[in-house]
Amino acid sequence: MSKLRLAVLGTGYIARIHAEAARSQADVELVAVVNHHEDSMRPFAAQFGIPRQYTSLDDLIAEGGVDAISINSPNYLHAPQSIRALQAGIHVMVEKPMAMNAREARQMMNASELSGAKLMVAHCWRFDDEVRWLKQQLDEDRIGPIVRTKGSGVHVYWGPSGWFTEARYAGGGALADMGIHAIDTARFLLGDPQPVEVYADIRTEYGDYDVDDTGVILITWDTGATSLIESGWWQPHTDGPEASTQIYGKRGFARLFPTYLTVPDPLEQRVVRIESGFPETRDPHCPQRMYDTQLAYFADCIQQDRTPVPGGIEGWINLKIVDAAYESSRTQKVVDL
Ligand SMILES: NC(=O)c1ccc[n+]([C@@H]2O[C@H](COP(=O)([O-])OP(=O)(O)OC[C@H]3O[C@@H](n4cnc5c(N)ncnc54)[C@H](O)[C@@H]3O)[C@@H](O)[C@H]2O)c1
View (tube, rainbow, N blue to C red):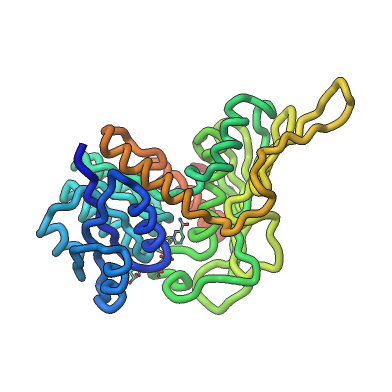
């Protein structure tokens, strides 16, 4: 089988991680890079040995010779760039949040359906070893039907700067940036249920910008379970690191980061802790291996002609929840989906 010819768009923080991931895959060849700033593109191309460099996506498309692209630009560019690539028949893996809002996400899904090019959304936590271990435990019904979850997408005494903090480039603040990791992780662990209702209180309390930096979101799923999500930047506390999630089942409790289960042992009349075997703390919390696994899955979906999950649908549902949360916070009402 011939190698997948991959391009990377953007040369910032996450593009570097995806370029590193490409290096780890025997069946992926990083053939091109796109960035409107030549100055930052050249050292990036040199570091990763990328032969073809373009200051515009259109130039790359005109020249061809690319099967797939990893889109790592600021959020406002995700939809137009993804749609442009999909229309040219190039498979797309786009960073989270998939777009500025659910309407744009829908347009991206339409472009993928029309062209047949695949659309994957880089909801990376689905590819983490600990998340997968916990999902396996839940699938084996170790804690019974899930009643509720509580998850965090929070930065403590830190927050991003630049385009992340401008609504016109980012769409939203900490909810769109960090809360979405906790939303997707909860949804994945619950088995991808449909959201039915969303209630939220989202505010700007810690910085001087036009996006949010603290929020609580309550999602009711069609299974009857609820998910409480906390989002934030510059917070004085978090219950756990990015995407950490607590799961309350009818017969036990499960926790991600640190990852374990607690279940009662009726014979001994005590609660037993089932360890995952992963270390209590991780450094870094976002390991390169998670992104390597994610890229390997994207390449595999293309080579095996399978629909990626998380794909457009998962990214779109997450953005429907984000949109509904902002609306709920604005109107102080529950939003029906
Ligand atoms: N999944 C994760 O763990 C994770 C982590 C960080 C960021 N992200 C997401 O990745 C995306 C990028 O974030 P980042 O932290 O890398 O940001 P960044 O600011 O470090 O990088 C953005 C890059 O896009 C480039 N760019 C801007 N306009 C462009 C254009 N018109 N054409 C080509 N390139 C252009 C910039 O030059 C820069 O190289 C965001 O959507 C963010 O939410 C995901």
